[in-house]
Image (cartoon, rainbow, N blue to C red):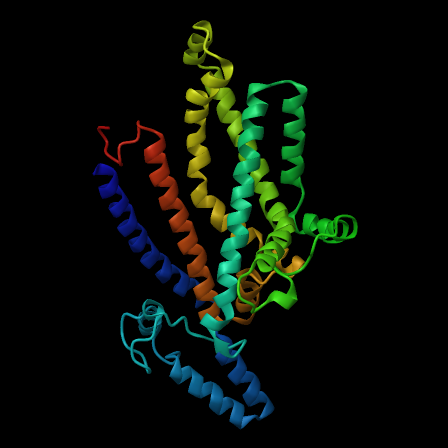
Length: 342
């Protein structure tokens, strides 16, 4: 019952935080002078294209960009009606992309689930690689296993993602015939889900998953190793060893469980880091994720597209943080749902 109450509390806290983030995103997007339509109107007037100016002015009125910023924000979120009634984020209307001249929902529709798929695969890769290597490096401290894991970890941290993407782009396709570019075979795009389509997606995920997840896995492995070494030096571990407890059981029952807390807490930071870190990788590998769209939107000041993508990344962050908090409560009985006397 206490856990359910805490889960409900964290959910409403997440919604409140998301509302605050929406205000910050809207303010930041509007900080640079001008916007896409203002810049376009200035260019059209300079070249004497009256028809283009009239269309741009119509779009400014249609999407309430001629109103005060506070009113634009309320209309964008969907708290108050705009020129077309209630048509904001709360109503599922994400706005219009002036750069692509299409609704934002159409541009990011397929890219959203592909972004989630790529980054969930990368997160899974991070945990599958970092957990055993971190534990093994700590258990075999100052041996060739520890030194090898450390070398691999530092190599992963030192190699830029885009450089690794370029290397695998060439050698992966040349020597291993790995498909490069996109997340499925072009002939299968738009087709219903089938075994061939799933197989194509999984094959296309190998390179981006490895590239995006390498640095995260290396950093998390180093953290887990450091936490494990700290726990292994504590008196309760020596007591367990003196009582003849099997090393594998002792590691899993005590040090790993305590050292695993930061490992779980990193879920909230890992998802947005993967999304932001995959922008250049997506450009290099030709992935149809939201990364390239965000880059284009920020360069052209396409405010509705940029704002929605930033809100999506913020939502991933908050969901990841909430999940990590709930898992920490289940994992560590010393945590008492935020109470001070627990």
